[in-house]
Length: 125
Image (cartoon, rainbow, N blue to C red):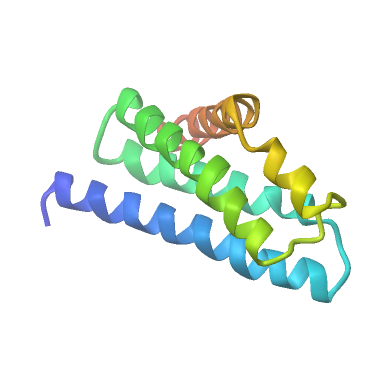
């Protein structure tokens, strides 16, 4: 498998990871009565692991682009999935829906890029 195909596999795994965290995490947070925001550690781990894997086949710019795009996916589709699966976020459905926008996307983008730097840095050692 060449590096480009491997990179595509990592992107697909990242998308699937976000969907799994959003759906399963939402259901679990509701059923087990814990705050959905506690699952952000799994998102951070996902971004770190992906950047670590990407550093083995590509440069930092590629890792930042991939994690940035995944962060935007997380802040839109992931957020909508958490609403659909009624996560225990502490907000009503309407409040959560109103939170989707540029501010949330920008915050998650910074989150994703920060952990991309961490993962890439770990992979360089």
